[in-house]
Image (cartoon, rainbow, N blue to C red):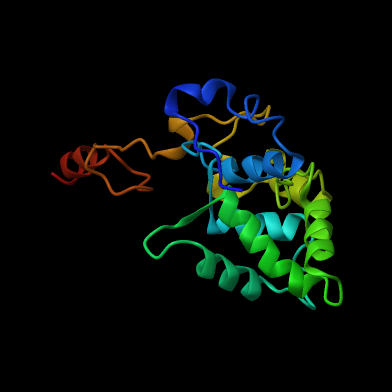
Length: 192
């Protein structure tokens, strides 16, 4: 059946008009907009396509690898485009399902693929959590700092800001660390 082209003014209730958005399309949209503030959810970039394949366990490392996923993406998308539409996305899944579920009929394999994806959203893998490890707390405990770092914090461990960071320049003309500043005149007068 041909894909329904909705006119641009019906965007607000798109999906409602053409029946409920399928769980597959829902997942497609979630991944399509992941990490891209300008994305509409109608097209998906290669990066999000591979993320979807990883997060939904389509890439199993045996039958389907990241390379397979990239090859299928390049094959399905248009020559001068960098994204795939939902229809192309389904084609790509069809391609991969043959590899992922060998020995099943195309239809069964595709259904299995859909099951992997439906209801999923981008997992937040690799998001850094703060860890209170002894190593980190030792490195961030300002009371144990020495040398020039120590001067940047007051007794309570609060940073002194600019005063602690920048050397306030002494423009008296004496070399830094010279102890007898201002004693020259005494010497000169003393020798007369």
